[in-house]
Image (cartoon, rainbow, N blue to C red; front, side, top):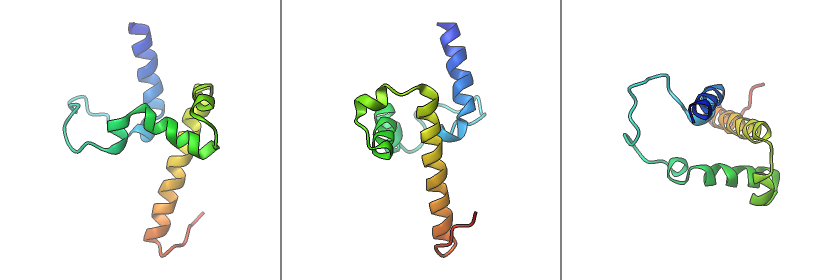
Length: 94
């Protein structure tokens, strides 16, 4: 079990921006506002990738973990660019 925890901890740190993981050890779970993604957890992320790839949830479950997380990272970066464009009078700067 310790091996699995260590592996997942490293993996999560590699994708920290995807999950908004902070470096603070004293952050306590359950504090603050409950978001849609935190309420629904993995179902939320499965649904995002299902919509992005236009595949069923079953097909998403069959994906490799790196493909799945890279698609999530792509979508988050794209959403960030869209938000920047909204704040930049609709102009996306590359």
